[in-house]
Image (tube, rainbow over all chains, first blue to last red; front, side):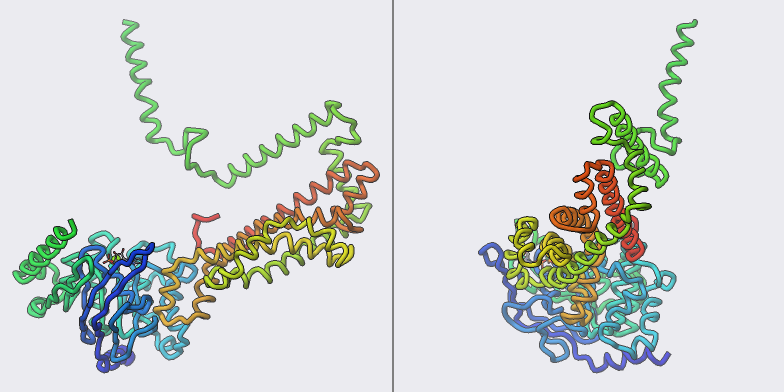
Amino acid sequence: MPYISSPASKAALKAGLSVTGVSKEFQSRGRTVQALDDITLALPAGKVGVLLGPSGCGKSTLLRMVAGLEQPSAGNICLNDRMVDQPGRDRGMVFQDYTSFPWLSVRENVAYGLEINRDRDALNEGTVDHFIRAVGLEKFTDAYPHQLSGGMRQRVAIARTLANYPELLLMDEPFGALDPETRWQMQDLLLDVVRKERTTVLVVSHDIEEALYLGDTVFFLSRHPGRLKEIIDTGFKAALPSGDREAFLQSDDYRRLELHIRRLMRDEGRNAA
Amino acid sequence: MTARLSEQATGQARLAPAEHARTRRSPRRWFDFNQTLKGSQRLLLGSLGWLGFFLLWQITSQMELAPDRLYPGPAAVFGSLWELFAEKNFLSDVLSSVTRIVLSFAIAVLIALPIGLLMGSFARVDGVLNPLLGAWRYLPAPAFIPLLLMWLGTGDTQKITLLLMGVVFFLVIMLADVTRQTPKVLIETAKTLGGGRRTTLWTVVFRHSLPGYVDTCRQMLAVSWTYLVIAEIVAATDGIGAMMMRAKRFVHVDDIMAGIVTIGVLGLLFDVLFRLLYRTCFPYLGRGHS
Ligand SMILES: Nc1ncnc2c1ncn2[C@@H]1O[C@H](COP(=O)(O)OP(=O)(O)O)[C@@H](O)[C@H]1O
Ligand SMILES: [Mg+2]
């Protein structure tokens, strides 16, 4: 299929995400809550970045600011040298709670982004079917979301976001509410699709194993206020057979990093107490 | 010996119900929480209620509590209902009442829907209109009858205006409430897919609220019937209410009751129509909703 190569060539032009000196304060009931303080990070195009940290450290807030759903109090966010100031098609978001439009079938849900953007070319090229197949829902194209399981609905959301060809895919704890087996399947599926399409991805997670498994880079945030505490590179995975979770979990590098992050998490717990 | 035998027997009897309950399929309790009924069961129970009602009516009407002329039984009422349609051209009365209802309600929805949609979507629109319309809602529409009679006379315009005033303020506020219930995350999903304000308003907010709109209209239409009767009793030459006022002058209680029955049946009919519309238009809601 000629069309599968096209996103790859588009990806070659991508420069990636840069977050510079971003802080965020919320006003709630007269008090000012500092959710994030001076975050600076960069994610090169085609890479998977993971925001990891204890709950309440501002992961969702940072992701929502990158999506343009929230404005930073200070600093700026750029995607491929364009300033982010409002939501847009270039930054697709997959939310935590499997949001599909209940009145649209699986196919119509996946086609939604292309329809509202009047992207006739992509619709005619078979993009919708391609991504329905990519997430393994070809048997359910005409089903409504209420007929699907949570995992399947999350796949609809992923397919819908990818079919829109975002330059950056944002995901907020996308597999948090799924059972472990389904979660592992979805992680593999995500890596598979994302590698084929060469999408840049920023995922929020609070699970160490998931973060190390998915991420090329893991950004560890600390709490109160949210600060970038450490950037962890997972280059060791290059030497491992790809897609082999067992080899990954048994490697010395994984165990070392897991223990290291576990200690970071524990320190966070102590500081909070 | 006999004592031991009977002990064994009771022991078994004590075991039996528990085992029975495990294999039994239909619920054994008549009244339990979270029970659901089959369609046929619902129909049966519903008929039971109505049967009881008609029985009670028939019996009390024959007990000489009041003269037959003032308190006719169901048979007499349905007899005069037939007579009304067959001989007294009641159908044209019914039609003019239905026309008033449908016309005024259509106008009310046409006005209320855009306003409710905008109020429910945008806080600033709500900020201006909610205090205003929310207050008007509590002014009883019949209080305006003297004014309407002076301004618009006794014709259909006056009646339709009264019906309109009776429902439109409630309708706006309720439709805005429905609109407001659109999950924030669906709106944000549309935005991150590149949806602008207009696109998001129509393809998400309006579309998500549609079933709620239909349901709200169904409920408000019932209120509309109340105002119709008031409008037609006050001043009218045709319509169900006017027929009932004519019948009152000649103490035709059976005709009055026939009018009440007609209004009840029509109200029910519209209700069923709306439910049918709901079920055929929104199959994606699954069974959880009625
Ligand atoms: N809209 C909001 N108004 C006020 N405070 C908020 C809002 N959103 C988030 N916060 C606060 O900001 C902090 C970070 O929240 P969040 O980004 O959801 O954390 P995480 O996703 O890491 O669990 C929390 O203390 C939270 O209470
Ligand atoms: Mg969160």
